[in-house]
Image (cartoon, rainbow, N blue to C red; front, top):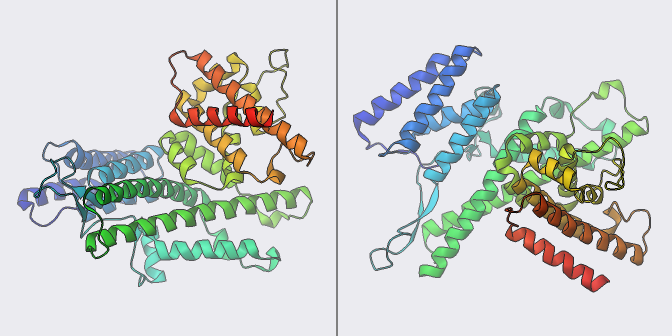
Length: 430
């Protein structure tokens, strides 16, 4: 996000010193008073930079202190408050934006791509950051070393590719706080995806308005930032996928009695992702859009749905579905019961339900046939077609039931596309 310059006057400097004094009083203590000081600090930054009529971008130091609360905070309230503030600041003072967008198009109001010369970022972009500095910054809540993160991803991929896990060096992996790492990566991946979409829209708008010149320095910087964001987002997706595959391998090893007590216990990453998506539903859409690997995307959707589906204690004619069928198809069948659909929608939310059904259906269609849980038992083309038709009928039925639970509910544009696709498949396959 863009940070304030040096020409804001003495008043700005005194105001910043007063705000920093609030956070300085909390120190490194983990007490109720320190907690209240940090909340007061975040509110003061929001008041000056977001709510004020003459708001100004926060300084580099203020941004760093907000990010420090996010990285080392132990209170869920502090973590969420600092994340939301950083998100608001990024939207209010973007690093890259178009100027004169809302002004009449004239010779003096041609849209220009503006790149902040000095901007705060959660990443340390310098490749000269030493290992000791990285460790010190991590303990102090410093910025994330993107190069170190790249090395971490590479190490995890190498471990996943090892044929003999017992001979691989996993000492570094054992020191990782996976819950904190997953939380940070999930938030950053979703933010990067949102930024990519914004950058792409701005570049397209600029190209349509005045054309884009490869020699324009601002345009080149924006395109470079877009590529960095895309590649980092892809790397984080790979990170999630590698850990999910490791979790599956460990689960299979446990079932076959190939693990030892020394291997320890670790919460599967899918459960950690579900926890974050549950407590911060604002990132659900960005995550489902950004994460493109269909098999694991469907796994997240299915587990999210089954976490909230109100399963009946006994089977009745109206719910002639086994609660043991914890697949995507099994979840869809439960939505044919309006009572269960209404209860589940109340727990998750109408908007979130649609997102999960839409992305679950898209992921199901993208799966290779061997991965489809309804198809594993029989590989014949006829069975595949029948299974696909059944899923299509169930997805249409699910949306119909959702409308019955709330007559005023609007089907999203993505939902309409899914319904059209499902109806077309049924028409072709029947």
